[in-house]
Length: 247
Image (cartoon, rainbow, N blue to C red; front, side, top):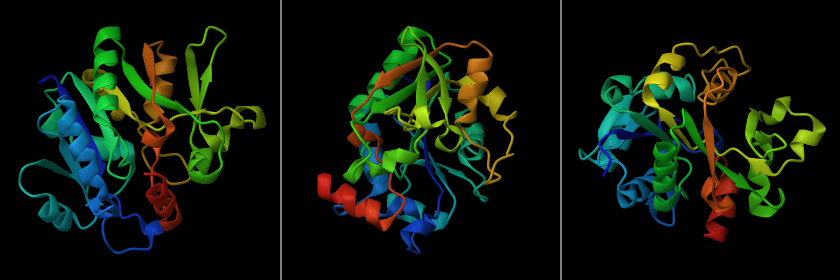
């Protein structure tokens, strides 16, 4: 157990593309809510005894389903992932490392969480991120098409991350993608979150923008590989059906 590592689970979204009135975190996968799959992996990892769950849309419903055994942070306005993490600041400000997970990525494993924390600690990185390499973007892997791409230099070192919408045709052919599982140096992260801008199509504050900041500051960014199945997120009913068919 590492008391210096705090896990934050983002679970505030509505998930309007799911065409449901329930919070996205409570979407059912084989009889268990998405967020409960994530919480089970966190508990089994042993990395963080008391994860913080950021809730927003129908927060009372989420907290009622999960119960009083967790720490909750409130995101009253859904202004992006960066803003969601900031909402947890007061409850996580004493941690040395912050791991960010997502309630709509229910396939995350305890093994990945532990590897992310271990690599971050041993390598002394500012950011440690999981990446996954998919053989193609077909069938259940179609959801990876719009993921940001991992750009590496000739030495195989991570050079930058490019969003799909900003990528060239050659970059879009890259099959190593970013599922957005991060471990951050907490002090650096809190400082940089205040610098995030929302000058994008969604007018939101994106956590992924911290990667570019770290690049520009020549900070150490480490990566760990994970199986594609663990990177799956669910945004639509069709994607949920695909996920149910492969797990």
